[in-house]
Image 1 (cartoon, helix red, strand yellow):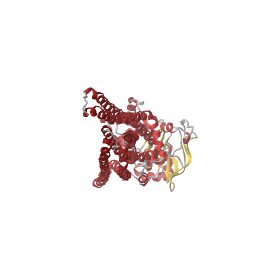
Image 2: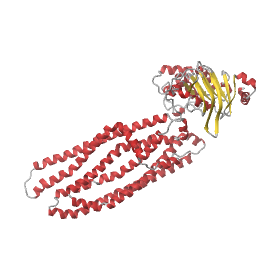
Image 3: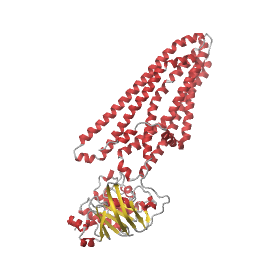
Image 4: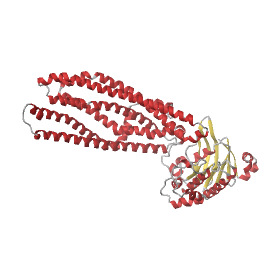
Length: 595
C-alpha cells in the first residue's frame, strides 16, 4: 500500500500565505459577500454592546451607589433605569451572538458548498492521466478534510479574527480613555506576553502541521486498507495492516497531545500574565482614586475592560491555527483545481456524425520508453461487428480509450466520416458509445439506478425491457425487484450477473457504438453462453468493437483485427485468418478448446 502523502505533498504542506492564495480565497467569498458583511456588522454591534456594559457599571457605582454610600437617600427608581439598560445590553448582546453564529455559518457553509461542488465537478472532468498519479485516499481527504478546514476559516476564522482584533483595539482605547496612567502600566507589563505569543504561534504552527500530516497519513492508510480488505484477508495479513494503522493512530494521538499541551501552557500563561498585570494595577489605582484622578467606578470600568481582553487574546491563538491550516488546505485544493485536462477541447465543437470510424496511422504510448500502438490503421464501417484479439499488453484496451477519447493519439488521427474526434463535442461523442468492461463497477444503490445511472429521464419500463432483453429478468426477480439494494461494487452478485447488468446498462442508453472489453473473460461456460446471447441482443443494429481473449466470442465478427506488440498484423474473417495460418491461427491453436 502507498502512503497518502507523497514527497511533493509533504513539501507543500508548509503554509504559504501568499497574495495569490489570499486572492483566490477571497474570490470564493465574493458570491456570499452580503452575508459576510451582515455578519461583520452584527459583530461590530456586539463589540459596542460589550464596551457599553462596563460603562453602565461605572455610572451606577459613581452615581446611585456613591450617593448612597455618602449618606444620601436613594430609591429603587434611582437604580431601575441603569438596571434596565444593563439587562438590555445583555439581551441585545445575546441576540447579536445568536445572529452572528447563524449568519457566519450560513455564509461559510455556502462558500464550502460551492467549493466542494466545484472541486467534485473538476475531478469528474480530469483525464485518466491524473487518476493514474493520484491516490484515492488523498482525494477523499481533499473533499472532506481540506474543505472542512476551509469551512472553519469562513465560519469562525476570518470574520471573528478581525472582530477579535477590533475588540482588543477597542478595549485598549477604552482603557486609555478611562485612565492613561493605568494603561501605561499595562504596556509596561505586556512584553513577556507578546514574546510568549510570538513563540507560541511559531511552535503551534509546526505542531498543528504535524497533526495534519498524521491525520492525512492515517486517513489514506484507512482508505486503502478498506479497498484491499479482501486481499489482506486472503493472504492473512490482517495483523500487519492492523499494526500499521495502530502505529499511525498512535502518531496522530501523540501529535494531538503535544498540541493540546502547547495550548494548555499558552492559555495558562495568558491567565498568569493577566493576573499579574491586574495585581500591578492595584497600586497606581490606590494612588489615583484618593487624589481624584480616577473614580472608584472608573477603576471598576477599567478593570472590566482589561479582563475582557483575555478572551480575544486567547482566541487569536486558536484562530491563527485555523487560518494557517486553512491556507495550507486552500493551497492543496487549488493545486487540484489548477490541474488541466490533458485533452484539449475544440474551440467550436461540432455534433458527432453517425458514420464510419477510422484509425489512421495511430501511434500512442503512456511512457515514451514503452510505446503501445505503432502505426495502427483500420476502419469500422457503420453497423459492422469488429473484433480485436491479441496477447495481453498489445494495446487492445488502449484502442477503447482512444475511441472514447479519454486519451489522444501521440500522432495520427481517429475520425468519424473524416472528422477528427478532437473537433467533436466531447460529451456528445461519449454519449454515443456504450462500453461493457471486464470489471463491472456497480454503485451501492439499487438495480434500477445501477442500470440507468440515476438518470431520472429513463423510465422504469425501459429499464425492465433492457433487463429482460439480456436475460437478467430472473436475476431481478430473485433479488427482490428493481429497487433491490446492490451492495458496494456488487459484492453479492456473481461476475456473470454483474456483466448482465452492464449489458442492460448499455442497452438502456441506446448507444450507436458498442464496445465490449473482455466481457466474458472471467465466467464459466454456462454463464458465457448467457452473456453471448446478451451480446447478440446488444449488438443488433449497432457498430460494435469487441476486445476478447476467448476466440469463441469473435468468430461471428464481420472482421477480426489481430494485434501483436502494438502493431496490426492481420485482419479478416475467422475462416480467412485460420486459412492464412498466421498470428490468428497460432492464437487459435493456443486456445485449443476454442479452435
